[in-house]
Length: 386
Image (tube, rainbow, N blue to C red):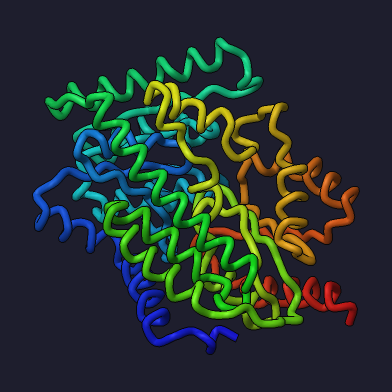
């Protein structure tokens, strides 16, 4: 029912889609034109505001749908395809324009990949960001994270011969908070009127923000919200879904299936979605401490292993708040954090009587798309009571 959209809204969504296509070539051209530095960040929890406050453009390294061609010469094929695909981009020269890369240590592979990456693809600035896990409420965890974020800031200052002041950090925090607030407004529109969007529309909107300055994205985003808010909600009897995936965006061929089989996405727990803008940063506190607080008290995640924030309860509440009929969880093959957590997560969803389905995916493998379609179709028919 996205036919209700105005011509300008269609144009804006096409613009967001274009930004996500050939994104690294576009960024290289932007760098040449703007004469600025660009740092790539592996998902998920890099404090981008610190990079932005340095006058450097932080971008997120997201995978493309291409097959992995070179990385398997250096990494075993049974390792997470998301990390292998990002390394493959570097080996193919697509990331040569970057002035630096930040690697958050989310899992065993992201802890190991920085050294392997450096051996086979040079990068001027490389930083491994060590993140705390376990009971994040402990003062020692917060103290550790303040040290890590501060060291990251100092490393940027030394390498690029600049100074990141608290005032610059606060201004970046305000800009990012504006961006998060706008995305929260857009997502509230979708919860109220999910028929207005195709399943992949907001994935493209959020992904586009990871490839451009937030100030530019905010302008486009505000206009999209204005267009969307002018359209009255309509009744839609299609099953309403919540989608969940860590670390990257869902494969386009897979996410397009939900429109094709007669479902509508009402909300999501995607990295290129609510995970990216879930919590604002308190701009009244010490800037580094406020960025740490966002990580500690942000969205629950199996990479944090934090018993204070239950991911199962979080997803159950998301399904209820979106008035959704079920949830689809994407598991990238060989993802250990989600793989370990999934049995518990499924138990929690089932106990809350939330219909749920696991979809296993992998970068660049298209041969199983029809099998996925059959599985999704069966899940949607179950929700319909067919």
